[in-house]
Length: 549
Ligand SMILES: Cc1cc2nc3c(=O)[nH]c(=O)nc-3n(C[C@H](O)[C@H](O)[C@H](O)COP(=O)(O)OP(=O)(O)OC[C@H]3O[C@@H](n4cnc5c(N)ncnc54)[C@H](O)[C@@H]3O)c2cc1C
Image 1 (cartoon, rainbow, N blue to C red):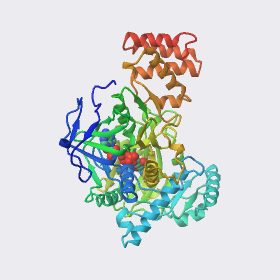
Image 2: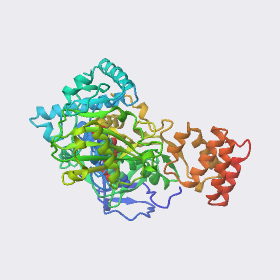
Image 3: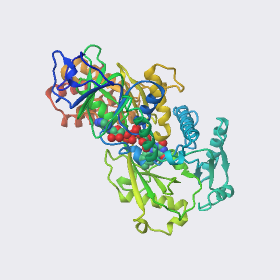
Image 4: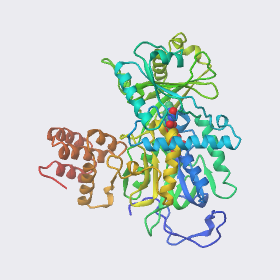
């Protein structure tokens, strides 16, 4: 096994076990072979969850309230430090497409959120206080004739799906939102039952619920404790523990990776040490959200979203800068339960960078000003005392679906990531789905579209170091075969090693497009990046006429 660290032999548990905790002294290892330094503590839980964003936390909650399993949750920082902390909190159905792969999951999730809010009320608690819950209703706003037609069709479909939905012409729209710039072409789809929550309050509420199980020994949190590696059983190869910087957390039933946009890199890093690579093409998609605290200058009765939000066009024009070519800004506006005006939002691929970019904030301000002329009378600099900017990295998947399910060949390892701009909204449905999978219950929602082995989502590449050249060649060919088109190729190459990228691209052009000129151009680039003599031989072979797997 190619492993410079962590291939932990089967521990023989010989001594005490109390409250699911096993002290390190109680574990005896035969032929122990460590190169990871021993952890400060070693404990066992039924389920270990990596990532305490809204997805990880709600999965933990669902296990705790619907089973008797014990749960540990680990985060490299704290909840809300990832995308969750930037979330606007819309649980809207107005922007979801009926018949899409995510429709059933979103619908079920919305139903579960509503049941949670109602349950709080029945316990005498106020969902507005606990979750920042508000049934504000949502408006999807279009400004062209084509938009109006699309909105009419959408309203019809939503009604057929059993939701309360109305088409509003410009005259009706001005009654709902007097501060909106209304001209003849403007129209909206209105969903009066759509709700929103506050990400911070909701996360605090979920943590509080989870912590109620701590005294029974069923729940533990490990924050500021990044996961360093997985430990595999040498008997069945399954993941049996998660090694963090401070702890070894054994899992008796399942390990769930819900690390948002970090899931791909994390899995890659963890698997690399087993001589195996699992490529999850999740990418960070940065978003800015402008928050104007206690802002009452604008009247806003509902949550608003422009139709551009449905496909996120970039703001580029003919003489655009590189940034503009990569930046999408669509108007989304809502007021939260604390009276803050939330204005968004941007989308861009700039790696894992989370720095504040004032130019992006200005683009958002300009865009919302097109819808609310009153805002144009204010300058952003006048608002510096009351403004905040939330920045987060949405976990983007190229095919627009989260990946939820067991990893093939490692059946106790599950992924739950890639919810992009709908993670808050789809959290409870995702949590239910994961729990049903782990417990072997029939699913309320079909999980097949989210399976890890869906083509275009994940593929396996074996790192060649300890393998024969023939195997290596075969694996690369296999990798290329599951790629459907160039867009797929681009996202699947993201984050993998340079030499693998080179070879995969070369093979792609050669095998998939029969485009020998691109293959040759690429071969030129490959030559510059050749690492070893063996690599070069492989590239040369790949270019030979008639070379197949
Ligand atoms: C501006 C903006 C507005 C949004 N608005 C909405 C909205 O209105 N409605 C909606 O539904 N969604 C919205 N979203 C999307 C939503 O916020 C995300 O889909 C959701 O938060 C993703 O949750 P997550 O738990 O998967 O990821 P995250 O919240 O990013 O959590 C992942 C966690 O994994 C941890 N982690 C990473 N690596 C490691 C490691 N090695 N070890 C341990 N832990 C690790 C991180 O620290 C992090 O806490 C918005 C997002 C943005 C950016």
